[in-house]
Length: 177
Image 1: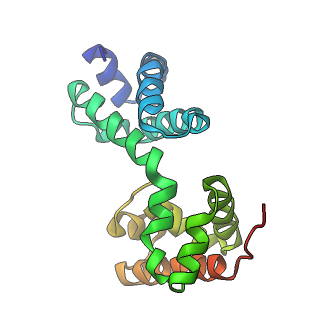
Image 2: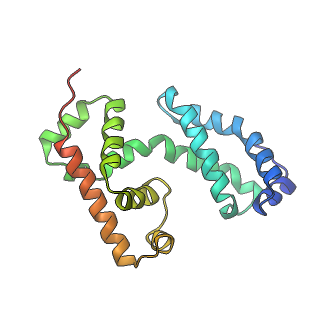
Image 3: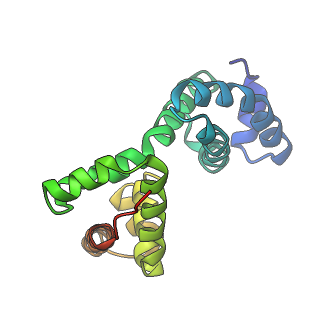
């Protein structure tokens, strides 16, 4: 991955042309990373797009142009495994062995659909907080600042949002193929 330090610095400073140039330069490398990391080829385009969006939003947090490759690889890896991580994070709380076996037998696409439906069923405030934490990977302190809440209120709302997702998944009917 070769990018010019000048283009990187200008993109970090907010130059829209430099940022567009940087995103265009990095797209092939990101696609290659995603094709290698993602188990499903159908997810590659989504991962590339999400990675570019994250880079656009977080370019200012990258230390240097030389660190950018490793940073992007980490983002891609997380996005490729995110659906499984989000599902597995609270697997033990889904109601025991019967539910675990039910979810283990479901195709990944159906699990994703159920997870998306569970997130869509949440009230906006709960959906926002779970997306900020589990998708955008913001810290509790960052979320609290972003939403204007205390750390305790943020933790409470996140706990409730995750509990609501678990309840939804627990009550979701078993899809018959």
